[in-house]
Image 1 (cartoon, one colour):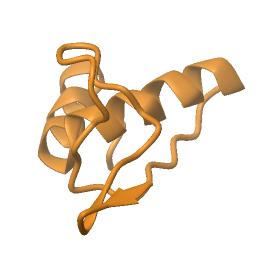
Image 2: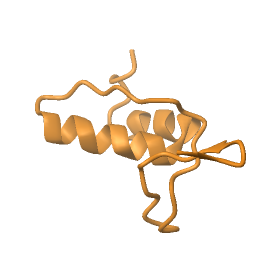
Image 3: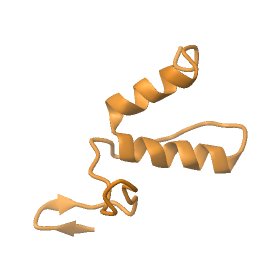
Length: 65
């Protein structure tokens, strides 16, 4: 949705209850199952780019190599 020049996504930030405002246009995650991939991709949309990279490094430093 776009209102007054601002694009709003369907992803809701659980901390605010409002649509997530992110510097990401989309997030693609490859995982063993679709539920895990969707959960991580949704988290990335809420986190934004820098926090997403830090998150994945924190759970598995070799994941981004």
